[in-house]
Amino acid sequence: MTTIAADAITDAGTTQLVLAAVLGIAAVVLLIAWAKWHPFLALISGAGVLGLAAGAAPEAVVDSFTAGLGTTAGGVGVLIALGSMIGALLAESGGADGIVTRIVNGVSGAALPWAMAGVAALIGLPLFFEVGVVLLVPIVLLVARRTDVGLLRLGIPALAGLSVLHGLVPPHPGPLVAIESLQADLGLTLLLGLICAIPTVIVAGPVFGNFIAKRVPLPVPALLATPDRPAAGPSGGQDFVDRGDLANPSAPGELVDDQIGPRRNPGFWAAIVTVLLPVVLMLARGIAELLLTEGSALRDALEVLGEPIVALLAGVFVAMYALGKRAGFNRKETSAVVGGALPPIAGILLIVAAGGGFKQVLVDAGVGNVIADAARDADINALLLGFLVAVGIRVATGSATVATITAAGIVAPLATTLDRTDVSLLALAIGAGSLFFSHVNDAGFWMVKEYFGMTVGQTIKTWSVMETIISVVGFACVMLLSLLL
Image 1 (cartoon, rainbow, N blue to C red):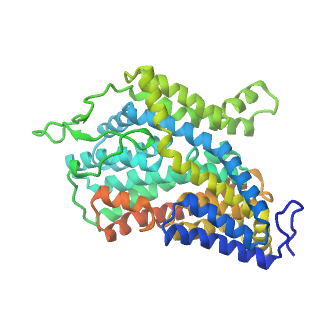
Image 2 (image 1 turned 180 degrees about the vertical axis):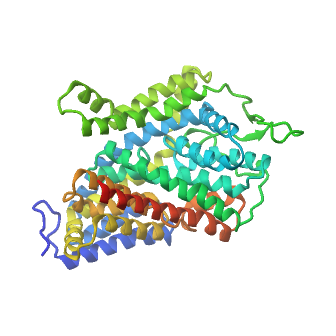
Image 3 (image 1 turned 120 degrees about the vertical axis):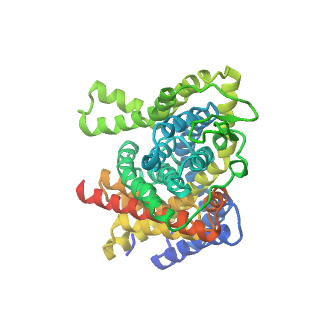
């Protein structure tokens, strides 16, 4: 018998709650996948269907949804906004391109795919997946034109590095939402996510890239035929033209924006420090909580500096100087880049916030308790349940963020029965499931297809399979850590 919380918005029985959950999730899936509604509207509508089907009063559903939306926007929205500001400065200053060209030009031959995976993972820390693709694709095409390594042997590692970071490592929206919903420790989740990211990138990147490149021969598209790159903000970048020595294709060459000309590079190490600073601060907080005595001055200081909002705000301040000023931006231009980072992420913020509202209706109606009780009675591992729920929503909707939000809301009550480490691993299991088999209902699928000039079949064989490998290997790593920790 499921126990209904005293503050639940309905006293419906188990059967009705399960039916309500199915109807609510089905409404979201159908509105996104079939009716082609924006996920923001689909999540609002799905929450209404769920609450009303559970027998809750309309005003109670509205209050529950609003509370969840506000809590999520306040807890996660600010972090996404700060992260996008760092990403915008990294992209617009030329810092990201400096990192890429410095590393790629320093290696050759068989080491190039590994370098491409590493640099993609590095610049993928503060950048959204789409932004990373926009920045990296011209580099991949240039290097593929100048070498005989092969397009997919370079492209797959780059895509894998970006995708793994997007699904498993905060401050990306998906992991942040899971952490917020499950009340997981961000520093610990970040540490464990990075541990899982390394083998996952290796297997899905250079290893799979080398395998699939032999089976899907792919010519290098003309560089100038790549899709137009967005103009500004966190989805921005430059329209790069190869200025290399045409008589000597192996020469490093120069990447120049035809609209603004050569731009002063802020420096390799300045860009590296800016990218890693928030991550190091958050990791330091997690390590301090594990190793240092509670109440010590050092631990207290690291706990404050490692608070996500403090760490990311510090990253923004450092980026404004180390990237903006060093790249030659004046104060007005730096402010314009920082401000320009916000409009393009409005849709993401609304989806995340609405997902928080949907999750809260799930919780307040008691659906989570029903699922938790059923999982305990059936002896289903919480990590496996979170992974499978995220896989189902991902395949149905094509949205990793919606999959993460929904799965986290469903399994949230199970998190209260787990220890600190397992809650972090549950967040990662959901993140891994949210990446499973990207196909034609995912915008990322079409983005990769067009950039690399592939057919739908080739994109499924390469990109879709790569995403599935990331999901499975990432989850396997999570399960292995659960046995060891």
